[in-house]
Image (cartoon, rainbow, N blue to C red; front, side, top):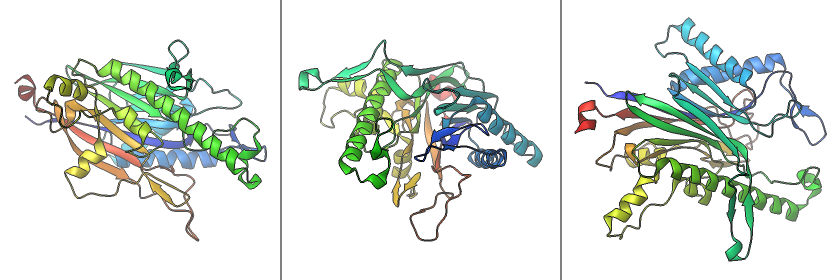
Length: 361
């Protein structure tokens, strides 16, 4: 019997906003805005990229409006139909709005495109009923009552009787977090200390968001064998503290108590690209280039249910692809980026479930 295969992708859409709608005020007081022609070009690029990704479950970031996401899904379906491709269109188009979004000043939310209809879905952003708090006993105080963008949790069915959870997330960027109207927002003012303080503020916010996500993951993962995937733009490298907070700790290698090790493994996540690299010679996993700095900000993590060293695994990671040919280093002389394209590479992880007989033993 052939294995059941499925794929999970992350796609930062780079400001997927309705046409003729203001977003992100510029330093001179004007607004960014897509003309209808520019919006059509953006939708076309995203739809073409979805054809290339050919993924069953796509988690998108920077989705401002549900209508814009629907336009992408419809254009993708049209491309698939006119080309006679075997890949099915998306049966599910979900938008997870940002609590901070206003009609006159929209904020980025999340999106999900799925070839099957989810079993359930929800979003988390308001933490006021259960805030992230720490540090009082260490001489400082930290309290987070809301994340900058929502966390989307989508329950999907990988096969009959095998539910799984997808966590789509977009953590705070490294861009300085400054008070509204701060002169430090204009780099030409040379307020270097203020901008450095803003970078620390961004890191502190991202750390709190990572901890809030980790708390939700622990609630979902502990003492069960339901697969979990964390997909999205974590805005930092694989080994960064905030990324590792999301992934969780590995047990100490010299730990002899297997019950302790199993407890750690139960809530640990594995980095798809890193697992792939251990088993292949593929080496380019760049997903973002900013001001000449190449990095990996977009990640897919998965739980032990698909880790190849777990004897009780439900399946395996088959392959990871990074679609980054559209990324250019615009800091190089004479190089121009395609403004219709995303400024992030896309990551697709392809998995397979074991045959039913293997799952039942």
